[in-house]
Image (cartoon, rainbow, N blue to C red; front, side, top):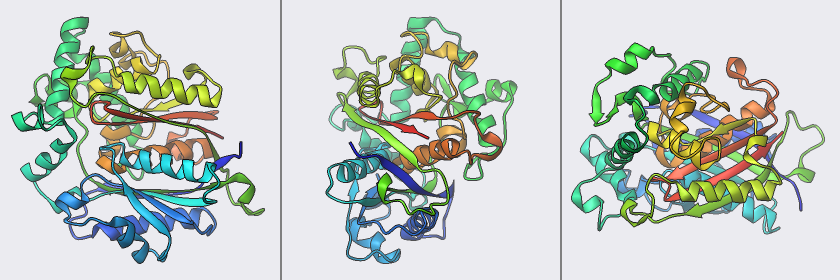
Length: 378
């Protein structure tokens, strides 16, 4: 099987871009990734986005973005899988190159939440839930995460502050990430004193939504130019799994079955076990998701993921995760992959992990209704 590699990455700092357009943010990331890849020309563009057609009033991004970044005429369209949209776009690019259909592709995750405000944003995000049973009753994704956390605390008898370590770690790691929204560490007291937003979750248990764009250029390893400037990162696995959208349709809501399945499938494809990876970029949009993702991946027994907040077995959220970097929704998966690639290239600056050779990157759409797992290797 041919080697598929990440040849270039580009990121726009996550933040609030009130006066900048959606296509401008995306173009900045795309051009940066192409430059990083030494000018390799992509044959297709796969776009990960969740909200553009709703709050930016802009659909058909597959026509809009190539027009603005000098790639008119290439195949291009949008992939939507809630917060896993960009990860899904990356998976499609991987499949297209692996199949021999194309030789190279640009993947871009883009989200522009500042095109709306307040309740309009919350209403739009709520569309990732099951409308007939959850959305129609006014339950938001944050509300569902709070329900999961409350049940988890009840069943495991974990102390309420058990999750604080996940947030403290993420915010500390974000200090050295130039693309992070929050580049300041917090203290345990700041976590304890933080306002409860959706009981039992406080404000620091929730990753704040923000604007962002990140891009990756994929190609075959044998097509890299001889004078390629940096380490290309091999994609050794890419797997997708799904679960019931409604929590009430799952036998055990506290078991992220799709996350578990996608990890098992990805590790099988890569010929490894989860313990063979050097770090794990998971979806920590809510603290409870961190614990459940660690359990699903096999790093903790069910009901014991919270214990890794104080005694981690593996580095997570290494450049701030969703809490430190910010939550750019459908673009989040592209940031995760770019951040993992930086570590594997040895280019993560002061945040650099020592001897990082293999990464597992998992992006969740909703409460693990969709789970996409990638294995990357140096």
